[in-house]
Length: 128
Image 1 (tube, one colour):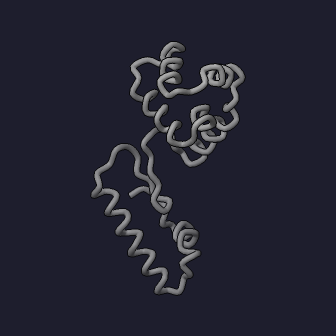
Image 2 (tube, helix red, strand yellow):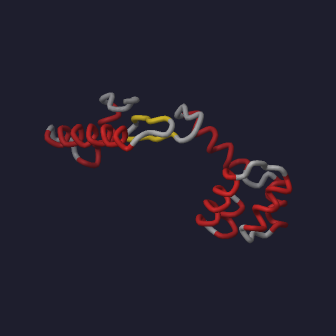
């Protein structure tokens, strides 16, 4: 999160990729990652020491808990979930189903702006 604060979204994803690819996440590894990403090491150390992003991280964890996400990847398509790595065919089947449901709802007169909310209320949410 310090990478994003210093250099934007591209830096965040660069650092995230480096950390996920790392075999170790000790202090030296984190320092090397920050240096390789050309972050301000003092700011990185201060962010870790002061728990600068703890509230944001805790909010993300609470959000994940609230929608029952306990791992990655986890995908939501109109409230329907796909957990883990999935084939394109799985996504296509759900998307095709949702397109058909949306079309039927529009034919029933449901305004486009209310499709998602109506779909969820009618039980469109759920795993495939």
